Image 1: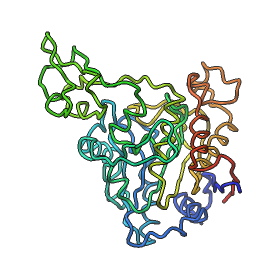
Image 2 (image 1 turned 90 degrees about the vertical axis):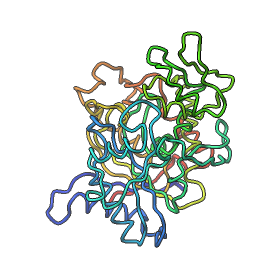
Image 3 (image 1 turned 30 degrees about the horizontal axis):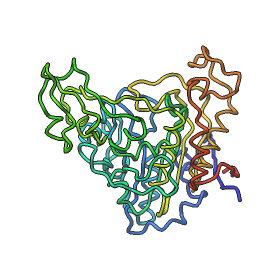
Length: 369
């Protein structure tokens, strides 16, 4: 049987129902009430937005989900894992501060924030991936794996490396620890940008494998034969001199995202929500955002993250493109704004692989609310 995906548009013209109330009604119609949350820890995985970005989901949406969890006796918390790149969410303190700047505080959302992989991005759990072709054990943030119930709340958008960022991207890449993110993005090891290195030795002190070595010029370099890819050196470098080679092929990246997603969702109750609005061409990890690719579409919810992503993608592909977006300079003759914006990517790879390894199915029945 096709998976059911529930949909509601953003129309709320009457005083009888506000948009948050309509959002709550959609979630409940999709079967949220069937999940036992009484006394359970409930992780709500979302993206708090890089400071400077204006396309991220506002805390108002999170507040609705938090309240519904509380109404069912659950103990909700918002969560995300630290980033691999240099930015405002590289460690838990900066990450929470960035979330506060963007409005995600307990007074606005009704619950606290827990950064999934801890202070320096290394608080992780090795989770076996059944049927994984590229990942045998996914490195997932501990605070995410400790939850009894998992909910993904995703901003559906484009992505410069995966092609599309939906539920699977939010789950797979977003729940990976720093080492987990590096495993997905990178087929090699980190390297030291010599011009930035101040020879402080922080990388050498944190490494358990003696991979950072001091060269003849006094600068450090990474011995790839010793490096195991844990990415701890990236977290402690005070000058951001240690960086990642973003060299994984888009197709392999998408398959790894699917396998990391499987590690997160297997074995516990899960529910998935995506909002197709401000469909920016790039991830909310950017400290900026561009004009949306298409007009706002609506709200989607399902127990099946694969069907959910497929439904959202189909809805985007059915929309007219916005004339003054980045697509004005792209070949959009295929009718696919994601591949038009990022020609080297194919977002379908992730969904196909996710279906293959048993996360869900691409066939869906759309239920309008």
